[in-house]
Length: 290
Ligand code: GUN
Image (cartoon, rainbow, N blue to C red):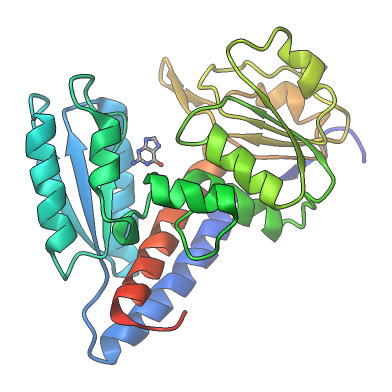
């Protein structure tokens, strides 16, 4: 491949297609006299980044015909109060999905809150039952949104994972760990680098598919990337008035065969995966076929 001609893995365009299909299906259900799907969106506190993410998710829901039900709570909300809200949403027949935006304020027991969500409404896929299904390779659970979005993006662009050396930088609960399991499921040989990895470039240089989810802007430089690698950037960091990924895009695009931009790569795919998971929860609740 000529230098500088790497394929841009355009999550924005693919998202547009996915969302059109979701909207068509929902329009069809509503035209048939069914209620529209509904997603409860819970945000505790005033973290500006979380406020932006939640606003994006709500806007995306409304555009495809999913009702988004906002539950915006003050930062001094207690674990008990949040558990009571979750119980109420679990019992509400009209609510198909429950999304609790993370991170929660440090005084709240996040694990307890996530575990309290009915697994059939856990469209984020963070409940141990859904995470367990990913480990056990059981169909029918919810796969967390960023891993699912990346899987769809790579599939769309024909990136084969079977037998490939894939390196994931970052082992977080939201992305790195569930993504690594999904990649294993797809037949990749997965290495996971994390904060205690001695020399991450030793791993990244060997990767046929390199995926970074650290939130450290510009961490991945060209010298750390194998010629012709597929590079997926999950980082979203605000640096001054710019949004930057983990990957030094200008440098790395010269070496990669394909690369996701930030913004416009994984971000929109994560939101589209949330819409897909919500539609899946709705279909199940109403006994509809996909
Ligand atoms: N915070 C960062 N990413 C996510 C996500 O995918 N879901 C939720 N609930 N919180 C997040």
